Image (cartoon, rainbow, N blue to C red):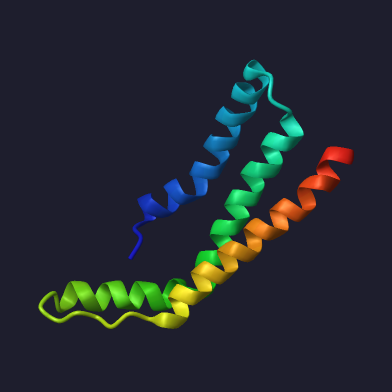
Length: 103
């Protein structure tokens, strides 16, 4: 399970990415609103894909580490959730892209 150091990194990584991404986008001439839209969308997609199934996936990982000689069966709900929600988030991002272009 995540240590306090890992939790701090998970919290700080999006902020550090944002602090690096904005100046980098400005220097390269990219649109700041588009850059922030994509960055926020990717971060939100990670939350939507992983948050609902995090406990089950962590339990499966823990069980596999405790019994390396036994193969933990694939949790099909988790797999389908990740694929479906990731696809839905990508589709939503593509649909709303048009509003960003005109706004």
